[in-house]
Length: 499
Image (cartoon, rainbow, N blue to C red):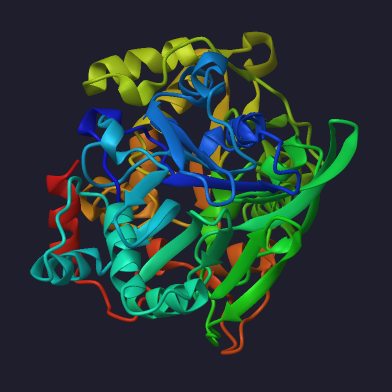
């Protein structure tokens, strides 16, 4: 529930954050470079701010963070003095409150006479305002509007009743309503990683070995995605389970301290559709393979009868699904749209006219490939449809005989209050327009979306204990898996005020 400016909206929704934690068995080793590597692998989850916190056992926690990309914030001269064998890292994109303030960046350091710890957080707490009000009534003073600070104060409040960290986090999970993957670093040099009982957000752990001072040391890692562990040539050991508290400390293998069981599960389906790195595995499922299955499903239910058709992905978001579509339909896939990787991201340009003009600079059509072809254009989602309309026009202007849009995610009709920056309903084109109306707006010859049934089958999460798909589908069907059902109008007003 951290924030952003209205000028920062792109056609694509954005994830909130990426979290990373690391512990080396060698107390003399400095792990800041490992944090840098892990966060570079998680950069796709947040590009507004980055930060690191380090410590040694019973040493003072040091923290450095700033607004910007990982490579700009965690420069060698900035992190050289951050010495420690235990560390946290974070990349941030917010959905509520000022995103340009370094105070909103993470890790967030909590210091008092009673307890000191650092925290990194990915998610959104739907009962954030209620908890904050109760804490303010008890005398807690807040300096930001982000829910990470509220969680930190709530941890400190529970700590006043018990110093047992497992008990603290068990109580915390019973009080928080919403989505979260959290890592806490204590002043004792220990890490605790946990997910909400419904498992909205991904969180994996693993290990690797390094040689330091001629001695081999084990380094344990916990991260939002397995790609961060892979970037360190590590071995993925497993996923933090929904409601589980995993304890990581020096000289001890990561182990589960407690688990809050919940018969229902609600993993965010959009992690598979768009957000996660294609190379990652989420709860044991390959993102790449899931996206290919989504494309193959589209080819079966929405084929194009043509002897002159080509499958064209929208770079880079539609590529994996396009491979699946092309293989299933036995059609050639062509990279007929080339992405300019040196142009500013469209969402930082104010005003729709400038956003439109940048599309021409971001994507270059390969005219000889497009001319006279029936183009099957594959992408993962349509939010406002403005960018897709421009791409369809670009293809037709450059000689496409027809353009058939295929979307691997079902129509997005409802906003997300679990950590993804979907706009309000009035900004979601599928919330107020039929498929035929959207097709006409796009100027496409046909438009077909993935079905919810096809999405569930393609991801292959399997049913939870209640016989449900184990996925959060709230942005598709409006069924929010929260303890307290959200009042959509009130929540949208609150989110809109902070954009």
